[in-house]
Amino acid sequence: VQLQASGGGLVQAGGSLRLSCAASGSFFNINGMGWYRQAPGKQRELVASISRGGRSNYADSVKGRCTISRDNAKNTVYLQMNSLKPEDTAVYYCNADVVRGMWDTGVSSWGQGTQVTVSS
Image (cartoon, rainbow, N blue to C red; front, top):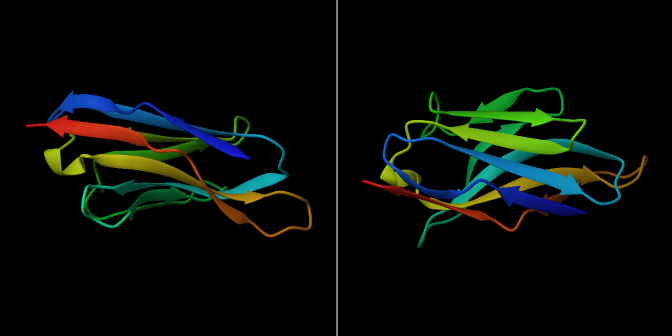
């Protein structure tokens, strides 16, 4: 299973970015999906997550500014980020709980990360 993230870049404070992450390969299903970020010198932290049914959860730092969504038919998760701040600068990683076979439990899989840089 591969998770391919895209959509990062350099943006001015107040701007917007939309991250995408598509899962490919052989698997039965994907349960929860999410976005994490890691800034230099800091631990990786959860930004937002979404269940297969669409229930979402956000870090307090991004509530009201970010929206996570997914397209189950495309095995893709999105993160719309608005009103970006310099403190949002980090490498953003997508994560998916991938079920490989009908009787298997989910296995956490990670994408390669995409850099988001917000200038002041």
